[in-house]
Image (cartoon, rainbow, N blue to C red; front, side, top):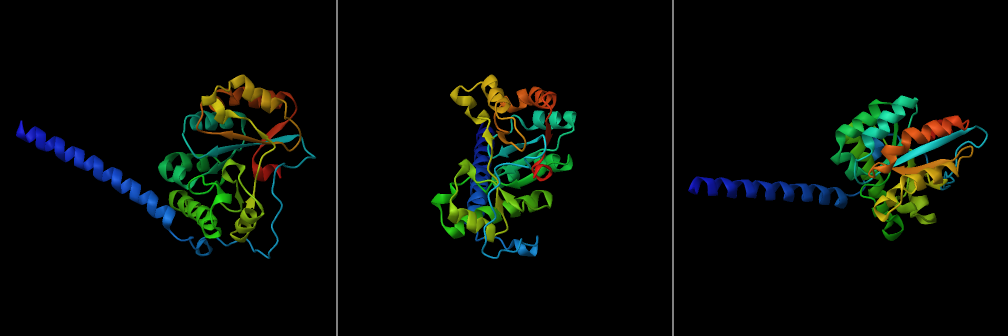
Length: 249
């Protein structure tokens, strides 16, 4: 009996210790100064001019861009990847650093299957509410996280969490080698817990089908994974080709 109690105490202490170590790791990541990425990936030259934000792709071609934000949850990742492979489509993922560090196998699968990964900050921060230095840290620490997990950079594109950006944010991002990517239509899949249905998400996409449209979707809900096959089939039937961000600009 004494041995059993001792073993239970030891197990509880180990669990507490692991939780503390995990919390310290994330805290240290957030409190680190901006990473000097120049030693890893050449920065895009910045001459003081901020590149225009991208909210639409090439409007002269019947193609649309599907982008998937990865900041919380993984429910739809595998179905998304399976569907993209089925349709021969290259996808674009905007990923946070915490998500990448928590899901290294999924990150590696996404890249191994030919998809694009760009910057969505380190921990999904409201960029207009933090300092210049913190904005740089959010972008650079995410870049460092992806380098750690997969050995590749997130440059040159980033998507501000919540679409929260202003002229100051865009200028700091540009100074750190990034151009902002917004969207043409928010599919609203992230409102699943608020009662939004799969049919409503599909309706939003179909009503915004036009050349160069950029769709915002997410990997954490279950709607996206369940409807993407039908959505891509309908998009193709209506004469459009689904492409990645870099293919569609």
